[in-house]
Image (cartoon, rainbow, N blue to C red; front, side, top):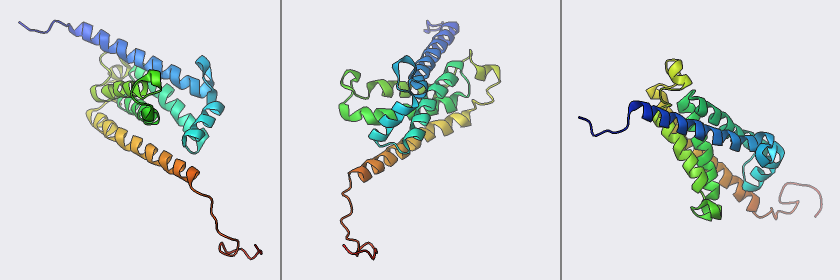
Length: 192
């Protein structure tokens, strides 16, 4: 007799519900950036925010953030290409969490709580797969192989690290003192 009191059907239902809900939240969040839906700023306003936060080029960063949320969210909701979708969402949320980290943990203080939880949830699907009720299952897991999961999970911290590094470099360049070279020092033949 098993000590397990949860049926396989209940596990499947719970996994499917959680995956669809996570995907839906990500789609809504990304749609704010891409289309200005749900009170969001759309690409133009998101680009301004990205520039102020040090993400360059700003418009490309806004598009990638929106697609990383909405596109990956839709794929997660459908259970399609789950390793790649989970990694894309986790990377986007990991970078967002790094922006919020100076504000502490809790979301009510502007902290990293919300994006960190979304990123960890997306990572769990990249690791564990979408479950039985998914397009990956329907297609014979063509885009959800064990090696794909390993590559996706390995890529998450690397991609987050690259984005954090690029952001820090851009912010450092923004705060660097202006060159104090005179025209003669910089190779110009014009008098000072």
